[in-house]
Amino acid sequence: MMRLPGTPPERVGVLLAGPALTVCGHVHWHEPVATLGDGHVLNVDGRAVVLTAGR
Image (tube, rainbow, N blue to C red; front, top):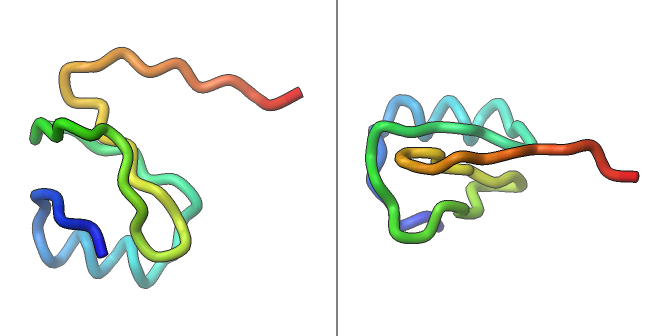
């Protein structure tokens, strides 16, 4: 289970929806990526992130 800051209502919503990738910010994490359910959470707080399509 993810041990990073967040609020319970949003966490439950993400777990129920089961998205492959959730992007968030506003709270700094030392590790920018975490696993949540079957997907991942990418925290972009203070970071530039470039996502490109796979080839």
